Amino acid sequence: MTLPPLRLIPPSPARQRPAGALSMGPVLFNWSPDRWRDFHFRIADEAPVDTVHLGEMVCWKRQPFIAPHLAEVVDRLRAAGKEVVLSSLALVMSEREREAMRDLAAGAGDLMVEANDLAITADLAGRRHAIGPMVNVYNEGTLAFLSRQGACRVCLPAELPARAVGVLAAAGLADIEVQAFGRLPLALSARCYHARSRSLHKDGCQYVCAQDPDGMPVDTMDGRSFLTVNGTQTMSSRYVDLLAELAALKEMGVGRFRLWPQSCDMVAVAHLFRDCLDGRIDPQEAGERLADLVPEAEFANGYIHGREGHARVAEPLG
Image: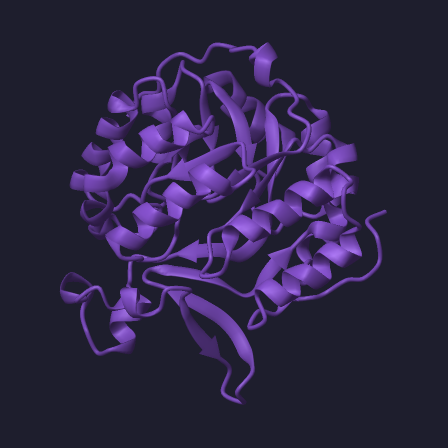
């Protein structure tokens, strides 16, 4: 496949360096269509987020369930003043899925598309688009290459420490976004772990992933919480919580902070992050309120501190 010629596309002045914008990531789990629609309706009406991502990132077999509601959700979000971004599939494995990604790029209209697989970046080259967290942007060279293709926004992989995040933000090549709340998407496989756990094949999975609306816990042999399975996706067991790191990351030049939808009151979560970013609430108090909102969750912030991802670090970023 031959890529189209690269050409430098300067950042849009209107969105060049957003000051603490909040985004809601796409729903990664197999929620029922009605729940998916109603969740986004409430986000549109009540959540203080600037951007909402829509689309199926994990398994294209789920896309037909949300497709009938997509247009009305987009309209509701845009009427509420939210920016809508269409997120692409994160692992393209068949010609049918490849064609679906071409259709997504061609049919997005004035909506920005977020590429989560390099397969779709060729279709987006020459127009403004975003790069999602499943694309490995680890250094300035990669960032510069993607920027020349038209990427104006990049959500970084979760495992990058603050030092690397700061370097990429300082390059000024794109708006930099970090993942600030929720289970972290870590990897994808051609196999469906959810189906295998029920002695089913991927092609006849019976959509058993819908039985675990926050993912299926995976424990070690000695009973310790280890990872979470969501269909073909491996996720963190612990929820990332960067409330205490928001101010430092914002100072480094990070302009956007992503919240991943979970089965909790995401409107209340968004208000906590918005109030913390705007200095209306102390990070420690915000963290205590967050723990009350998601009592079943264990929180972590290790990656941003250059530690193992499941660690909980109390020291400030430095």
